[in-house]
Length: 115
Image 1 (spheres, rainbow, N blue to C red):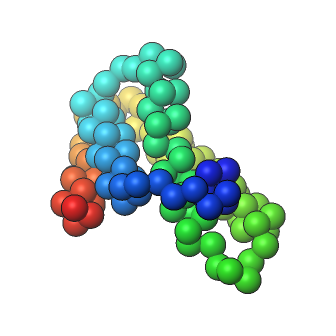
Image 2 (image 1 turned 135 degrees about the vertical axis):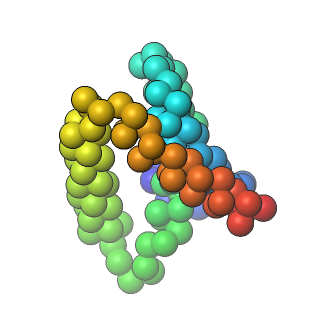
Image 3 (image 1 turned 90 degrees about the vertical axis):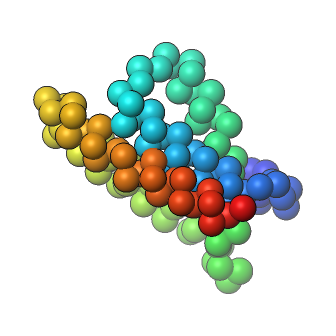
């Protein structure tokens, strides 16, 4: 939340978020195996864009502490749900890959809509 909270605008915000959705969906759909360093790099590249979007959506009357707390809690719950879903499909890799394909398609649609 740092850059956006400091008022530093990031260019191409929506296309960058769309690209992250497309990339993640594609990587899972293709059963890509990344190193921890590669995964960390992807997160480091796209996290500022997601953060800026969340700060941009923060209601003016809401304090940052309350907003950030809710954002962190909802993010943790979404990640937990994703992890549980992936673990449930761990023994069914084809099903996991098929489930990821609509995510990649959604990212592609978001890119087309954003540009």
